[in-house]
Amino acid sequence: MTSTQHSAGRRACLRRIVGAAAGIGLGVCLPAASAVTLAKVRERGTLVVGVYQDMPPFHVSGKGIDVELAGALAESLGVKMSLLPFNADENMNDDLRNMVWRGHYLGFGPADVLMHVPVDRPLIDATPQATIFAPYYRERVVLARNLERVPTLDTMRPLAEQRIAVPGQTLAGWLLLGADAGAYRDRLSTQWRDGTECARALQRGDVTVAAGLASELESVLLGDARFAIEPMPSPRAPRNGWASGLAVKSDGADLAQALQAGMNRLTQEGRLKEIFARFNVAWRAP
Image 1 (spheres, rainbow, N blue to C red):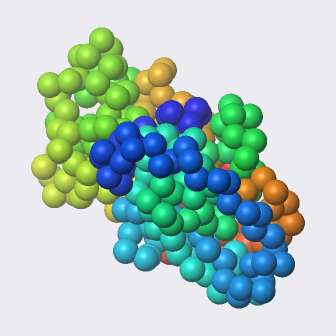
Image 2: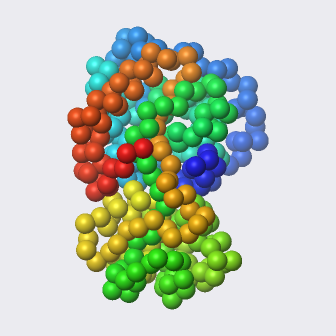
């Protein structure tokens, strides 16, 4: 999964904080932030955690999977958590610059650690200023369907007879738009902000199929016997999904080691799986 695909999969992937700000050039004149070490975090007594705004079920209005996980990681370091929510920029390289190793051109950040970063070799190689590590979840693109209307979905062809809810500017949306030479374009309802809204439309009966990320659809539909949630049967969809992890500034090696140790304990003790379950999401090991 490339960083471009990851940005496409995020709900706010193409939204800037201030549309015109990109042309001002402030982002290129800020110096890199000073190192954030474990000792500095403990001296301060707080771990500043960057989380994406409006990213259900991982963060919405101070609640979500990433928020609880961040709190557990801060606890493992013996400090409190301080959230630093932000809107996604154009791509992951921008997000890493703004929230990990330099700081945002609008004057805030960077965070001590950024959540929900794709643990992706090309991105790691392209960003020596950041350390990307501690994968904690494997995401994927899926379809949810009404089992009465669509009992099986081994190929994409049955979609030609269905009304499909999909967030427009997302990886799921692009896959459906291009599938089978655009055969399903007229069946797509794309006004939805994210996959959770698509899932609710399916629940209400407004559509018979919903597309999005597994975490989004599961958070609404998992456990409801009326619906099946399965990987999109498209050869273009990344079958194994992609892993999400953490990122810190590259000179914060001791902080990265401590956070990795904390993540390992949360996984071994089953607490990571429990956090996902509280938000009705099936945890998938990265």
